[in-house]
Amino acid sequence: MAPLRVVIAGGGIAAVEAVLALDDLAGDRARVELVAPEQRFVCRPHLVAEPFSLGSAVRIELSRLAGQHHAHSRRDALATVDPSAHAIRTRGGARLEYDALLIAIGARPVTAVDGALTFGDRPGREAFRVLLGELEGAERARVVFAVPAQARWSLPAYELALLSAAHLRARGVAGIEISLATHEPRPLELLGESAPEVVGELLAEAGIDLRLGSAPRRFEAGRLELQDGEMPADHVISLPALEVPGIDGIPQRAGGFIPTDGRLNVEGLTDVWAAGDATRFPIKQGGLAAQQADIAAQAIAVRAGAKTPISTFRPVLRAALLTGALPRYFRSALFAGYEEAASVSALWSPPTKLAGRYLGPYLSTMTHAGLGDEGAFVALEAPTSDDLAAEDQHQHLELEFALAAADADARVGNYAGALAWLRLVEELALVLPPAYRERREAWQRRRQHRQAGRDPAQ
Ligand SMILES: Cc1cc2nc3c(=O)[nH]c(=O)nc-3n(C[C@H](O)[C@H](O)[C@H](O)COP(=O)(O)OP(=O)(O)OC[C@H]3O[C@@H](n4cnc5c(N)ncnc54)[C@H](O)[C@@H]3O)c2cc1C
Image (tube, rainbow, N blue to C red; front, side):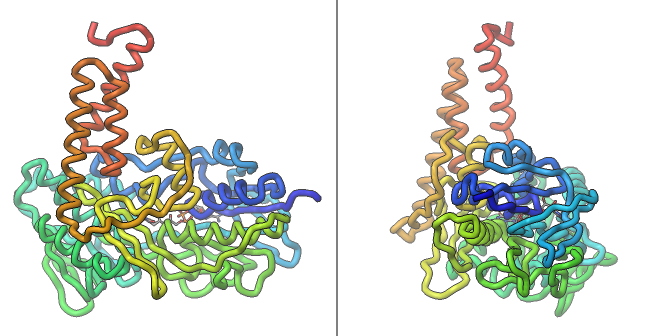
C-alpha cells in the first residue's frame, strides 16, 4: 500500500506534536509534509522567562526534527484549501495533494487593551524587556498586568507579575507597585479548586495587588479603564486577544477560529482535521493543543492503516507556573470527576513546562532540564500530604543543596559534576537563577578547554 499523503500546516506545538505522534503510530505508513513559514519551532510557554534572562525558549530546526521522524519540512504557508480536490495551495504557489490534512496554524496575537503594551509578538516582548530595564532605575511607578476578557488562558500574566516582582526585589528596587487586573472571579481558577488559594498566597507574598472580576479595557492618561471602574497606572502590560486569518476553503467562525468535532475533524469536511489555538475550543493552551494533535494523529494513523484507538478530546490542563522561586504545578480537567492537584513537585515527567505526550519528552532531550533520555510521558501522582508548606520547604532545601553541590564541584575543578547538579536544579526549578546561568556558561567553557587539554586560566 502506498503511504498516506499527510500535509500538516503549522510549525508550533500542535504541528510538531502531530509529527512525533504520527511517527510513533503510523511510521512509514504515512508520508508527512510539514508546511510552516518559519525555520524553527519555538516553544512559546518559555517566552515569559526571556525578558528576565532566566532562560530562552527552546528553538528547534524544523527540517532536522522532520528528518528524524519520517517527515519532510517545507518553508511555506497554507494559503487555501480545495477540499473536493483534496489539495492545498501554498502562499509560495505550490499545489500539494493530500489524503489527510491537519491544520495547526495557531492564532496571531492582537491588541486587546488599547494603549497598553501587549505581551504577544516579538516587538511587544522586546518593549517589555526595555520597560523592565527602565523600572530597575525608577524611584516610583505603578505597573499593572492585565488579563482582558478575551484571554481565557491567563497564566502568562501571573508569571510576568511574579517574575517582575522577584526581578526587581533581587535588584533592591523598592518603589514599584505591581498589580494584576483580571476578568477572572478568582486567580487562575481554571487550574482547579485549590489554585486560587495557592496563587493568591504567592501574589500576596510578592506584594502584588489583585483586582478580580473586572475586565481591563483601555489605558489612557494614567488610568486603566475596567469593565466596572478604573485604576491608576503608569504602565500596563496586557495579554493579547487572538485571531486566525481567513483561509479560503475551510469553515471559520468568529475570530477566524475553526470549528471541529470532539475528534478534531473540521466541521463539514472529510479528511481534514484541526488542532491547537486555531480551533474554536476557547482555551488556548499548549498542553491542550498537544492533546488535540494526538487525537488527530490517531485518526490519521488509522486512515494510514495503523491499528490504534482514537480518543475523544477530554481536556486536561497541566500547567507549571513560574514564580521567581520554585515553580508550582497544577492539574485540572474541564470535565467532572477528574482528580485535581496543586503541588511544588512536578505532576508529570519529564517535568517540562509544556506537558505534551510526545513533545514533553522530546523537549526534555533538547533542554538542560533533560537528562538525555527521551523516555515516555508519565502522569505523576500528587503528594499524598496536602501540606504544601512542608513540601515547599523540602523542595527549597533540595534546591539549595543542589546549588551548593554545583559550587563545591566547580571549586575543585569538577565541571562535569557541577553541570550535572545544575541540570538537577532545572529539573526542580525549570529555570536557573541568573547568577547560575552565567556560572554555567563559564563552567561549560572550562570543561571544553579541559577536554581540549587547555586551561583558560593560564
Ligand atoms: C507568553 C506565552 C506563555 C504561554 N505559557 C504557556 C504555558 O505555560 N503552558 C502552556 O501549555 N501553554 C502556554 N502558552 C500557550 C501556548 O503557547 C499555545 O497555546 C500554543 O503555542 C498553541 O499551539 P499551536 O500549535 O496551536 O500554535 P503555535 O504554537 O502558535 O504555532 C502555530 C504555528 O503555525 C504557523 N502558521 C501560521 N500561519 C500558518 C499558515 N498559514 N500555514 C502554515 N503555518 C502557519 C506559525 O508560524 C506557527 O509556527 C503560552 C503562550 C504565550 C504566548
